Length: 386
Image 1 (cartoon, rainbow, N blue to C red):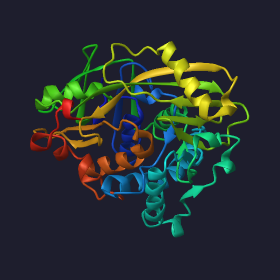
Image 2 (image 1 turned 135 degrees about the horizontal axis):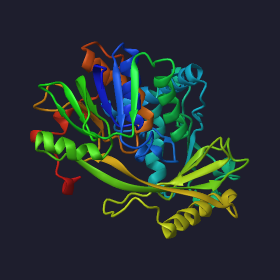
Image 3 (image 1 turned 120 degrees about the vertical axis):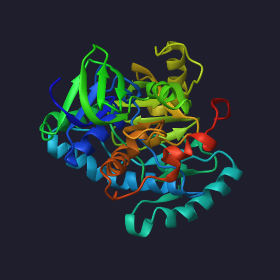
């Protein structure tokens, strides 16, 4: 390895690729190191749901995610124009059934708060109550005895296509600033020598490192800090043949998302399992997911299951992502733990992290709950309390 890098990013998932692209656009020389392939981990899933937090009990985390979802469309359109690669992005909206009178009262309060929190008069994005018969061709009215919520902020993206577009930007327009090193794992980083060690014994000079390799980063972080701040959680999803359903909104019902995509598939998921022994899809569970989805989306009846996916998602004990300089270190950063919101926030989180690295002012600052101080030391949370 003869090149010297300002930043080495470990992991070819959504956080790693987003950080690498943001750093390269900021003028840093970047190496992205991925042991297997782009999207080999949890980012290479099928669901692609970009769903906002509820517009209630507002906090910095929800405000950051809102700004990210608002700006994501411009980000992906620029990426698509830059690379010629489609990302499968569409502002699809979301339908959610209301199943009890108590929940109806609760949703009415959310509707009121959404007008302020989502700045509906300016953004045009709404969160409102709707007649279930309006969506009867997609969500059966019997699943929504007290009506439905229909909100227009939610979107979806094709996960692997988005990752491939990010990678294409690094090997195309940004190739002078970035190298993708695929098929060689990360073995460690010597801060004093500013040297990355690779699994094959090679080394490369790098002024700083970002650990963005999903749940695997937690073990490395534990070795470096003496604290385990997160773990992996297995998720499973599936694809159903979905020709003619591409323009339907996403549905959240019975704990499942149903998300139509441009490639004539409908993604259904996902499960959450902290006690797992492998990353292999469970066929019986896949069939159960399909039957549950068909029960409230009758348009899926008699459509074939055409694929299944399982992966280990990174989940911080405190649930919020971990982004920033690791305690006790001067050159090693983390970008992991996005769990279910990574795809929606990665571009904005990456820009903010790179602003930290380059000591510049971010357009939108990271919430304090994302920063390492919230995850380590006196603020740490044990796994059994998560």
